[in-house]
Amino acid sequence: MSFFSRKNNGISEEDVLRALSTVQEPELGGDLVSRKMIKDVKVHGHNISFTVELTTPACPLKDQIQQECEDAIINHIGVPREHIQIEWSANVRPRGGVLDKAAIPGVSHVIAVSAGKGGVGKSTVAVNTAVALAQEGARVGLVDADVYGPSIPLMMGVQGAQPSAVTDDQGEPSMIPIEAYGIKMMSIGFMIDDSQPVIWRGPMVSQLLRQFLYQVQWAPLDYLIIDMPPGTGDIALTLAQSLQNVGLTGAITVTTPQSVATIDVHKSMSMFRKVNVPLLGIVENMAYFVAPDTGHRYDIFGSGGAERLAEQLEIPLLGQIPLGMSIREGGDDGRPAVLSDMPDAYADAFRSMARQLAARISVVEMEAVAAPTH
Ligand SMILES: Nc1ncnc2c1ncn2[C@@H]1O[C@H](COP(=O)(O)OP(=O)(O)OP(=O)(O)O)[C@@H](O)[C@H]1O
Ligand SMILES: [Mg+2]
Image 1 (cartoon, rainbow, N blue to C red):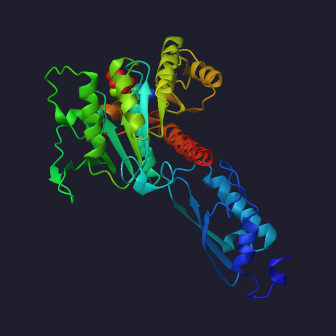
Image 2 (image 1 turned 90 degrees about the vertical axis):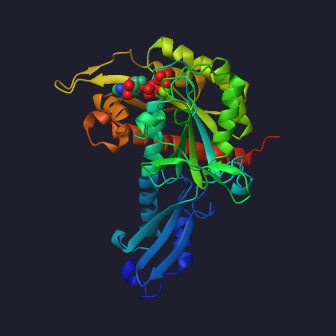
Image 3 (image 1 turned 30 degrees about the vertical axis):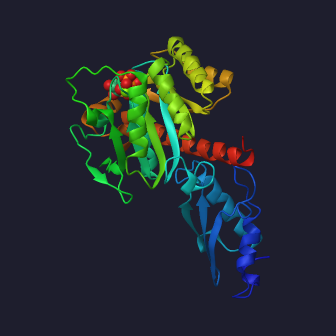
């Protein structure tokens, strides 16, 4: 039926819903209407508007969903594309479905960023993931739990900041996180003096981490990202264990392409498997280098390592971040690379990786709701 053959008021909200019920959610399955993702349908004459509620504001398939919604309306109702207006909203469903019952009240997802060994860019990935998710409209927090080298304050430009302590509504002491670039943060670096050698033992670190999780005013947050200590030793294992108790949604592991680094990923994975934490994916950092003067690509640390590993272990490769001078400079200057428009800051690569992670969390969450474990 064509647009012009309809009467002025011939389109109903039901027509719109019927058309949209032919559109599948590309990742989670089911149609948009049954998944209750279509809200606020309005028809004014031949203008149709509605809101699509995504499971994350950082949805990588937003463009595809938009296209398919428009096509469905055009095909089933016959109005032209310029008469269709789509608004977007997101409802990040918390782990287990109920925010009040979340392990950390008001925090939907806790994600650990780990690495089998030091220096592969774990903190760089944690910081840029956090800022990329916030750029998409998510509410994000960042915990620096790396006792060996707390570098979040430097990378986020908040060195020397001192979180203030307050008493909450229930008379309990709590801390107000430091904020920069829209990210709420706590770091071991805020608590200790850089020049002091600090000898940490696993239980002490766990205790501090618990305070960071439970005695900080985080809520409301969609994602809380934790920069873990590198490696798979005692401290990392104890922390992974205590995170399991707070209902960690999952972990990601950062690696470089060469085989020594990827072997470490195996260890890191088995550590998380041991404590029953799902692995959301791998991020390959320093994946290659493109010389800015010649445009030649150099596979400095080899190539294909993370891809092979992801296949072997059957977990997604969430992204590949090249080596870039502006990434390093952004870290040192306290302005994360994802905020830069320099080509060698690879902001798009960070953003795409963050979207893949957000999508993966939505899928893992849906599977967990569909098949509850006891
Ligand atoms: N893709 C990249 N391109 C250029 N420099 C990078 C990249 N990733 C990280 N770096 C730089 O490499 C150094 C190490 O990175 P980072 O501190 O993020 O690693 P890490 O794994 O957290 O290390 P640590 O084990 O010390 O905590 C930093 O100076 C950082 O700016
Ligand atoms: Mg680090």
